[in-house]
Image (tube, rainbow, N blue to C red; front, side, top):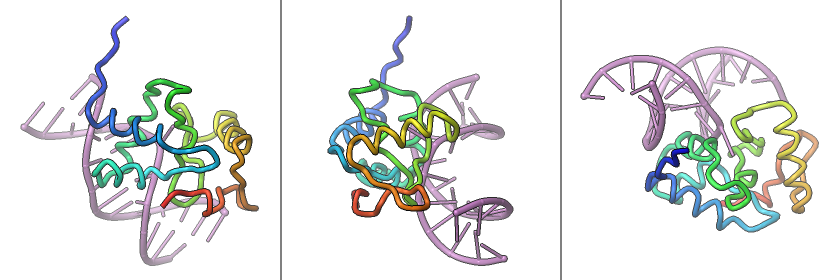
Length: 107
DNA sequence: CACCTGACATAAT
DNA sequence: AATTATGCCAGGT
């Protein structure tokens, strides 16, 4: 089975996400800016490939508007519900709109 | 190298 | 809240 070598861009994304502490979530835009990229979409593509699951807490990465975004390639459905469950288990709270409270979002 | 897709963001409707 | 339209950049084919 071939393991595709991660690109430098990917490595930066994984490392940055890995530095996100519990009870906190980072936005795709934040990660992008952090690694010096202006495109949050590229970050999503990197995480969607699922590098090293529990090693990189991809579930701590959400959209800038507080929505969960996606999880393992699923933008909706039971997988997203699971993502929200994980965040709740880590102490992250949601508002009436089902969005993460701003105080949990790194800026 | 050109084209298409995508776990986004922002503004406007 | 939701939906639509446009801009953005990296990766895969």
